[in-house]
Image (cartoon, rainbow, N blue to C red; front, side):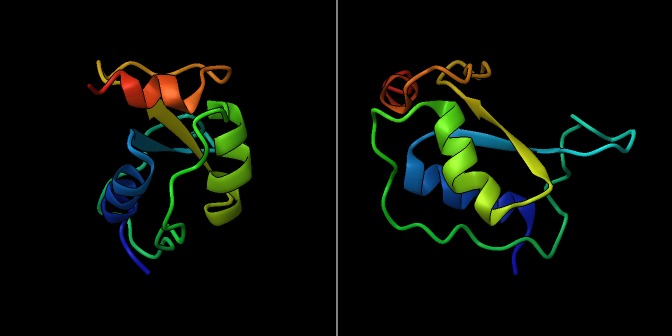
Length: 97
């Protein structure tokens, strides 16, 4: 098990974009950023980036939430702005160039 900071770094290395973990659920912390030093989260298991034609929402549902249930995620573009769900991953990745 790793820290949130490590998992975010691993996702960035594999996927080519920066993410921030968010709390999900009914508690008053819903939507708040998860501290980077939080422990006992799994390491991102994927070794290859998702297809560029996949949307941010599809990536979050298909990859992120399967590995990190109970957490939400913000995918950030190259300017540090949150990418919307319909944005293609190739567009997000290109924003870092």
